[in-house]
Amino acid sequence: MTSDIDETHAAGRETWVARARGHADFPIQNLPFGVFSTAGGEPKGGVRIGDQIVDLGALCAGGPVESDALVAGRAASGPDLNSLLALGAGPRRALRRRLSELLSDPRHQTAVESALVDIAQCRLHLPASIGDYTDFYVGIHHATNIGRLLRPDNPLLPNYKRVPIGYHGRASSVGVSGEPVRRPSGQTKAPDAEAPTVGPSRRLDYELELGVWIGPGNDLGQPVAIADAGAQVAGLCLLNDWSARDVQAWEYQPLGPFLAKNFLTSVSPWIVTAEALAPFRISQAARPEGDPKPLPYLWDDDDQAWGAYALTLEVAISSARMRDQGLAPHRLSQVAASNMYWTLAQLVAHHTSGGCNLRPGDLLGTGTISAPTDDGLGSLMEITRNGQAPVTLPTGETRGFLEDGDEVIFSGKAQAEGFVPIGFGECRGVVVAGR
Ligand code: CA
Image 1 (cartoon, rainbow, N blue to C red):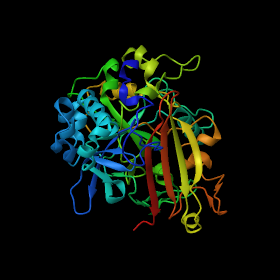
Image 2: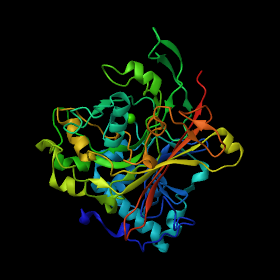
Image 3: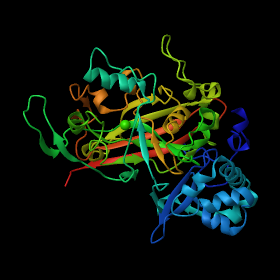
Image 4: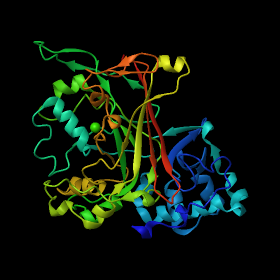
């Protein structure tokens, strides 16, 4: 894995782009891909640096990008990044190295500056056209906490440590950060009620997850071996799997989540690439004594040595009243992404093991990530013990679940000694009343 570290990660590398030096999320060591548009223009691919976006189409037309990097740049200049994702890591890395060179060497400033667009003039879009979205359940502390609410004596079901649990989600309702969260209506039934009623969800929640953008994909009937599965992970984002807990409780048996989850899933707009994340790879936490070793198709020594990430994820909330009073968002939790029981490569290997094909631009959710401690829980259902122990906001307001006007803000950061930290930006959503 150390061979994936190159000059683009050097802590000493600086950019000539104004205000990008020391940027908390998007220094020159990050260079994530996304899709943006300016007033009256069509969506197109770009790379974020500081508070600017490199318009890849404009840059490539100008001539300073060649060979493999040009192939990647052209593939990324359209209205979605699927063609770029299909190319795999080689061209993507070539483009990253060339961009890093162009944006750090002042001799290129004149040639590149005209391809820079200020983020304040841009609208951000979904980075890919998502064919399929799958949500997993790898946050073992989340699975245990939720299981305990449902089955106090037996929180984890017997399959949990043997098979990465997941379900096929809904791609049509994945939206980019900023999309309003319209409170869904649904069927709910109180435990003591005889019959269900239909109406706005009263238990609207968020779920803190990582999103995984799939690269080249695989052919139908051709599983991806665990040793090759990491190459399918093109990059990561933040993902909020908005959830209507009251709807979920009534509908989920026996086939799992349905309308409780499909009204909206939000992702952060930037694909933080596998290349950018290379310095932040860490070993997968050893399984606790007595846990079963996964079956061979899910086990790879290299993946165990490098398959996890040194990421810290945060959730903050801001109520309408807090914003009216000029108060900063209130942090609800901070959690390390290392609290995942399965690696991303294991998810890919398992997803394809029966022959299912993944395609470029497919999206995987990891499942809610919670820490084993109370200050690192990835959903309100866990924090408030299903609404029984509400949190108090700085205004004195309390929350068991989300109210209209509440904004939920996810952020994430990668940190490792000797390297410049990089971030994911934000994944935001404001809850609005249902129709
Ligand atoms: Ca979820």
